[in-house]
Image (tube, rainbow, N blue to C red):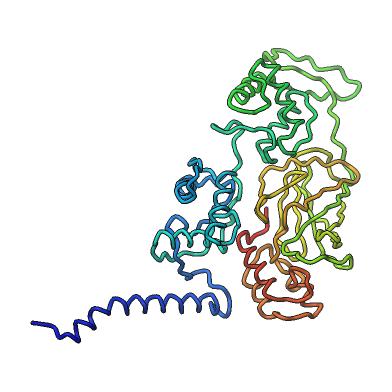
Length: 444
């Protein structure tokens, strides 16, 4: 049977109408979810975005070693930017630079992360399909921004100018404890550490280049294998030393009385930076904060007051009693409207705001006064003191407070929700909270 011309024309434009309808539904759905959500909040469960499958629920950052996803992006960036990016599955400095260049090229926010916006741009260029995902900025499980390298990781080396990380600290501790060096632990791979490396290489007659590579790592393994354990026997005063028989070979007996490490009062001064400060602060502005220690002595929180400085940072002091002097400390800092930050070294730094992360503490504390400049890392805002209490996370309660007090300049409201200290609760404060959802929880 022959179709009428009118029917044929109607049938021909049907696919076009279907596409237009789907696009309209998608736009309305996205607007509703973002602007309405559930009771006015941002919904985490049903935002549908155009993203490649390998980006579903993932945010890749420097230090990530999610091999398959990172390799996928390294291969893609090499092709798109027409420059070689090493395809090794590790998100290092070269990959970070390539990601930023890609973001600049296609005018997406230059964060250095392979995040949702970057994934969407790639999908747009490659013609991907809709994949429903939970945006990575609101995942319930915080992920580490850094993967700690083994002491002698294959294919890696430590050389001049490398930033402070656990591998550098590990080697500095080794040089001090085994080779008798007096290095400052927790610094970058600096001139002092390079010279210690050269002395180690010269001592064991290996290539003297100041670089910790496979040869130097191999020699360290040999050295540590020959270290003789030491047994200490405590002898009370005025009593003869014990007679030790059948002593195992390579065991040294030291009949000495050990000296306990000093225990006393520690006064710590801090310089800190908080997220979102764009205007000069006045010295009348204050912010409560608290600090706790983990290491040779574990403490409860000690509270203090931060005072604003003209350079947009804060300074404040806390005091601890009965703290053992020694190394291996981790310092936890939590400001009055912010997520707690765990700090493992004396001079922490980060290339992307809010991404500093660490595992093993190497800070040395002594009796008396000590100062720490933590201003090169940001305390992320968002854990609001609602009801004079913070709950250790950024959640719907914090978002609701900002929404319900938008436009307020009341002092009581500002004390809780003015995150950038500009004298009003507004969309800038909401933006800071959304950014902090990347981390969401206190460091522990």
